[in-house]
Image (cartoon, rainbow, N blue to C red; front, side, top):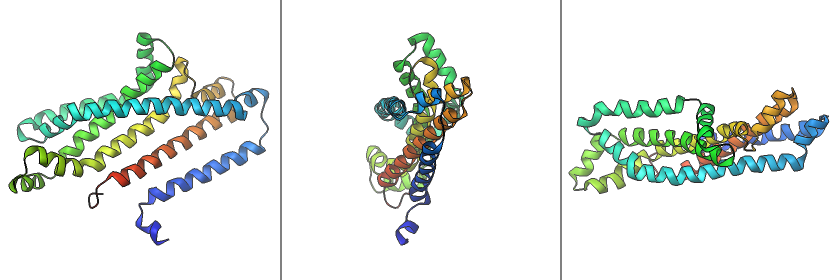
Length: 253
């Protein structure tokens, strides 16, 4: 119990929610009577394939997001974040941050539809849409994370002889890590939820259960899709929180 008290609440409470809701869904699934259409979609062989397709879509987009975001962070976001902390560049900062905010506010389904007109339907278009949509919170959090580093800390580092690069690597980035990782975690959860929209362009995901349930008025199918997407998002969020906790330097969190 003492260990639980030392850990942030979401580290141990979130998996507890996952177990409770997951167990509740399994008990409901085993006790409910399904129609032939619901059985065709919720039968374990078909359900397993749908879940794996959704995870594959999410993980593929995640890998691309991480690799692409790494390039963006190294070549654009970090230098931009450093520049925006300088007094002369501060008038530009609201423009960049608001641009990222507008990008996140744009409906994901609209982006996917526009990409479909360009790339066609299918798995590839869904991945591209998810990548574009998920990069924005990472970029925004990178800028905000570096910008919020206390100027006095940076000046103290420079005062003891640190070069600009050393100050960046050993002072600014470690202090910005929690905010940057929170952006990555947010992006991954966005991916799980947004991946359900891929069903509209012919890519199989758990969204197929939801749209089928709505179209054919099958509440059990709709509820199953919603619960499974929610559980998957909780699992991804919890794993991201663990990585965030481990990667954050001691004394910074």
